[in-house]
Amino acid sequence: MKSRNVLATAVAGIAVTAGIITGIPSASAATTTLYVATNGSDSNAGTLSAPLATIQKAISLVPAGGTVSVRGGTYALTTNIQITKSGTASAPYTLTAYGSERVIIDGEALGYTPGAVGSTIPGAQRGAIHMEASYWKLVRLEIANGPYGIYCAGCNNNTFDRLVTRSNYETGFQLQGSSANNLILNLDSYGNRDPRKNGESADGLGIKEGTGTGNVVRGARLWNNVDDGFDAWLFTSPITIQNSVAYGNGYNRWSIPNFSGDGNGFKLGGSSGTGPAAAHTVGNTFSYSNAAHGFTDNGNTGAIVINRSTAWKNVKTGFDVDGGSTSKLTANLAVGNATAVALGSSTASGNSWNIGGTWTLLSTDQSVITGARAADGSIPSSNFLVPANGAAVGAKI
Image (cartoon, rainbow, N blue to C red; front, top):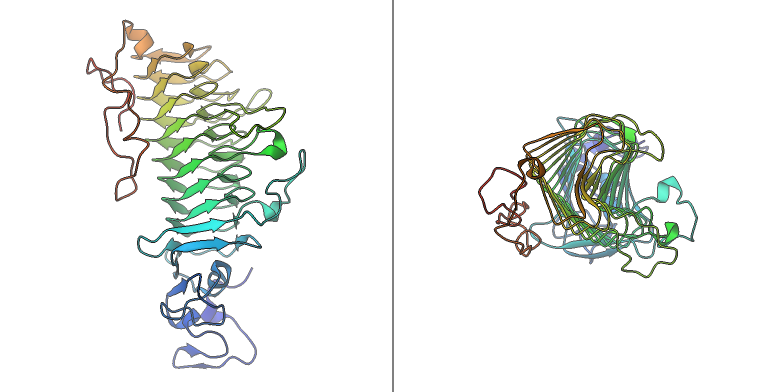
């Protein structure tokens, strides 16, 4: 891995005078922000008036604590973007869209888009953006058509803010391995599918096959993915999910043969046998119109907590926690599912099925909650699926 401080890199033949490095584009060390544009050149200095052409070049040059600011347009990749150098708590890196401009990172020309049925994607090729790094902030980027959108393994203390991961050939955003203290904020992930595995693998968001405390998902919208909205398969540490939405997952919109998509809104861990015990926490979250369960422990044997969340019109069970978990369900709302709850060894109090009676809703119009986000990236507030009787039950965003 290269040094995190370009000024400290010992490069033969480079002279340092009055803080200016000669022999490479001067902006790589003389400024803390490098700019990238579709009409740029990688021999440019990386200034706003003389931008670089590729995000990868800017990443290689940006000094610790610096920012890569990407101008609007579509960046069609021929090799994936690799982020392997880490910042520090006091000097994180930032990769962001410039101002309010729309940046699309398109991985359609990469390998495994899609891979052959039954093939395995080599580790380094997973992700139009492939990260093995810590202390980064990724802000307002749109990643499409990659072999995974973002794939982050062994990643700690990162913030992923207002990203869009769509139409990828595997999971839109996947975090795995030894990864802790990551914040996934206001993610939109949709339309991801995997012909390579007959639809069995591509989720909107996966935090899978790893460990690490302090990972938080807040304000995510995960919809129309071929497998699950969210999947925590074999992740052994607690994950916190707040103020999020999953809908329309698990349907074969791509005519994939031998279709095997699962279709859960939130799959909270588990395995094919007895899953690891991970005490995930879900609060103020909606799961609706999915092809299977709204929320499921999926064999996770841990003490999951689900509070003030809503399952509506899922094909199977609203809250499916009979797979071995000792979950605690409080003040949740289940309406219009095939079955409200499968409790098993879990406990439930103050939920709609505990209270009983008929539950009517102030609104079933999803247009606000699924429409344009607020200026700060949050999901706009509405009365979608709020109980008409005013009870403090279920989610409200």
